[in-house]
Amino acid sequence: MPTTIATLPNDLLSSIASHLSPSTCIRNLRLVSRRFNAVSSPYLISSTLVSFTSQSLLDLEELASRPVFAKGVEKVNADVSYVDEVLASGMGNFVRNAESEEDNDDIGDLGETNAANEELESLVGGNDEKYKVKSSYDYVSEAYGVPIEWTVVYSPGFEKDKASEKQSLILNTYEGHVKLFEDQEIAVPNEEGLKRIVKTL
Image (tube, rainbow, N blue to C red; front, side, top):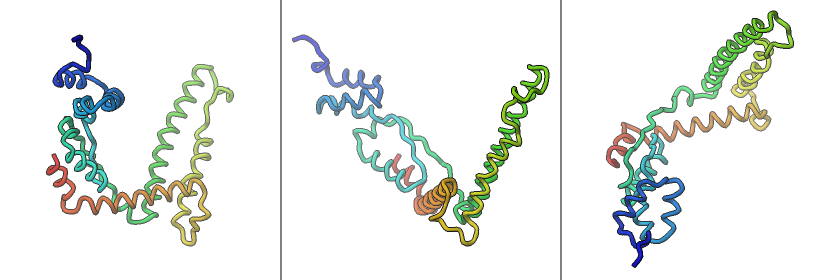
């Protein structure tokens, strides 16, 4: 009988599968037959990421409850970032923080713009306007409108249904932050989340 991939013993098939790409080859190999599915499935997930949210903890526990996949996991990465309580406590705090981040970004970009202007001037031997990149003033005048629009959203009488696109962005981002914080407080009271991770591993 000629040797084909179908006649190879399981341990050799398993060795071959261990060298294949999980995202494409393993997924396709699992569809070939029940035998190939059983042999290749342990190599589908070699690492996973868990964070301190209810869904992430449930996903890790679900993975651990499936031996055919769990036995192939070689590494579990933990995202220990924490959603800030102060920013979740009020729209004003959240927006002011966003404004400060925007200001910091402006400072960095303005420095790069000024440096570019100086370099161009030295190259052309003067300060000919046509060679200059956008000036600091132009940059600030364009960027400054964003924080102003954001500040309005926590002022008295602000109507959400009349929010601009930029205001809707900060409103939706804040609501998402609050939901993450609330979920975090449910998922990790008294180090419960960490205990669940350790127990699962």
